[in-house]
Image (cartoon, rainbow, N blue to C red; front, top):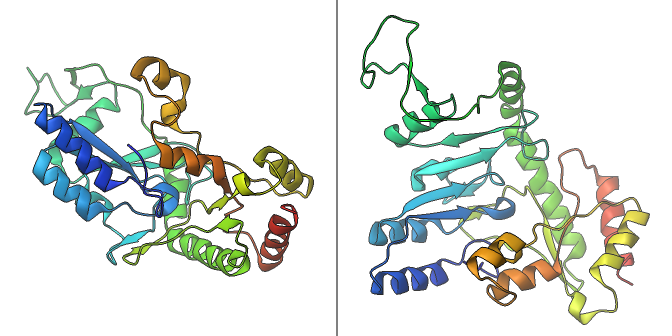
Length: 290
């Protein structure tokens, strides 16, 4: 599914068109996974209305958006989606070193996830075939070893207490970039919907490489020579060999996402950047284009 060219999140109008086409053929979509890309929430009200109409499960890939707000609600994620997945990788807003979590207001889903994370083992007396004692457990399905460690949780709880300050600092950094880069017509700055507060896991800057005399590869080299490490987020999934070979995707299948990829660079965005860092980065971003 293609993206909205303003918010870079799932295009809900195109999704609705595809759902209608499937329904007209007697087909049902089982689930929709929507990514709050870079920290900008999707159009969750529209997604929820489509779920009510077409009956699919709704999953929020929330890894970029802890601390974001949708309609003035910082707890929006689990209110709209059946399941919310999070990442605690070191580059995210807060970290446990590695790992993640699944959030849900669905009791049955929560119970299933808790069982699957521990080899499929359960001590739930309501499903046990017998009960030999407090040590007894059963495996009703094969699961995984996806338990986070206690010391990682201790780190995560400490980090979680700082989330608000981490996110606010990222917003200040984004505000600085907005002001410093706004006048350069070669650049397209990230936009924010009026009912959203961005969490800025990323600051996805688009550069009109197709209109200027420098390639992205050369631009990256210039930035690196000036000690600025940029990145690109992300290579479109549908253009990866697995999806091209197995699902028939090809260049042009999702033109908005592909154009975004060709222009996007992610510039430094982390809470410890200070004003002198931002002044230097902003200056070099422009200088290296010349």
